[in-house]
Image (tube, rainbow, N blue to C red):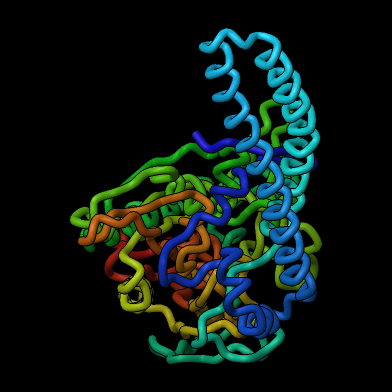
Length: 449
């Protein structure tokens, strides 16, 4: 079990866990900060990270830590040497000399305690600053500060021509009585929709189809807990970066999961796996809970943005030399899934300023909402390189017997609310909403009426 230190109300793994080394692999280790200081600063600037001075502060604190550690080691050597002398003096019957040496040892030990306290405090300060550094973006990440600077990689799916009198999904929801927002407000609050009748059946059909699609591709299905502890949320980078976006259960110090990625990736936390077991491929369905603090405006209407929603996730733990090939495989996997739903989509490579705290490279998938005339994000597929596995100490032994960090990747496959919104809007006809062929057997009918 990882030792912890306290940072405010959060418990994080100790410094040794944070700076665990994986030779030749890029992550935010102190040695990397020292050896490639300017490069680290340049890459952090690509993410528009404003606290670049943290790099220098971390190096300075590490210098202080090393100095204190050296003083402590020197004192410990004196204690050990004096203790050996005491034994030799006692064996010779020189009790007075032995007692004098004991007093010397006692003075060494008395001086040792303030050093130990100072070392612990310095390591805490160092850890507090280390966890504030985001992952370094890949060289493939385009320059840019916001979503407008993202790069469209490719588009797919047929463009939709809606019939006359077409309406957005929130009107179709009322027409077919499949989602009850008002009752959700009564039960919980705004952003907690109640799916009913054919709406609930459509959710179930989509979840089953997505899971079957993923397991057919080699992913093992999991059904994870919906609440996680601090160490789990820290491991995938939700803490301390996204603390305000998660629902927190104070009595038990648990967090409601914002995505199944969090518990699923942590299944292997603290473990050393066999290289022959790679890649580790996992998929999971879960409800997801996000406070979405600060969200407002037209884009939150209907199913566009809610606080609780269903999502199917895919996660891979892979050899670090293969993670970018696997990233492309996962992007292709999600693309095939979207194509099977017969939706118009596009794939976007996120610029540095629009990326998440933990990601090294991210592709977003958006589907076109024909009635709203806007693109809606339905999936993100990311390579975190060793950022998460460094925090969680997920390792493997390579062919030379050396322990090395794995790389982690994850993707939405898929998030349901906006998929449902676009399925309703893009497939509406005067006779009802015609579903794509792949859903017919799961839903039991070809049309929602």
